[in-house]
Each structure stands twice: as C-alpha cells, then as structure tokens.
Length: 104
Image: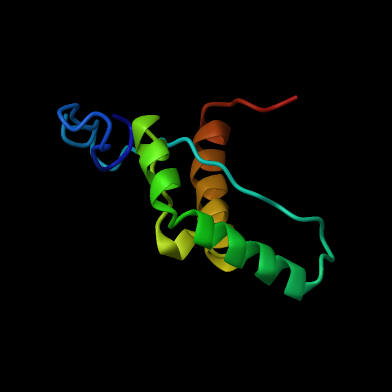
C-alpha cells in the first residue's frame, strides 16, 4: 500500500512505510471545485451537503468495499482541502523539478 495507513479493504497488505520506505505516501484523491467568485453561501451549502454524504453509512460502506477511504474531517472543508493540496503540489513539484521532468 502506498498510503501511510493500511486500508480496510486489504488489512493484511503492509504499507510502503512498514516495508522500510519511510515517509512515502501516494494516494488517490478526488475533490470538488467551484469557479472563482462562487458566493461563499453557495460553497458553504454545497460543502455541508458533501460532508453529510460522507457520513452516510451506505456511502462509507461502499467506499470501503471499493478500497476507498473517507478523507479526514480536516480535509472536508475548502480551507482544509486547499492547505492539503498546496502541500501536495509543493511536495511533488520539488520531486518533479529535481528529476528534470515537466508537463506539456
């Protein structure tokens, strides 16, 4: 597993971290974005609906069956997702530049 923690769908599969590759983490993630200038009330209402859906037991169970994980509460807000995404861009941007790679 390339996540830092084992996933519920494969509890016996060790992580890369457990295998000795410390601080290695690559995860699949999804986000929902709105156009710049979207009214804050609209963003808040949509965010509230999304957080409610992420607590729905049937949805949580189906995600687990598919090997997915619900993001932690700190990433379930616009601010939390923005902070996490900024850190990911910084982390991978450094690695990509160090490798001399670029996207066309």
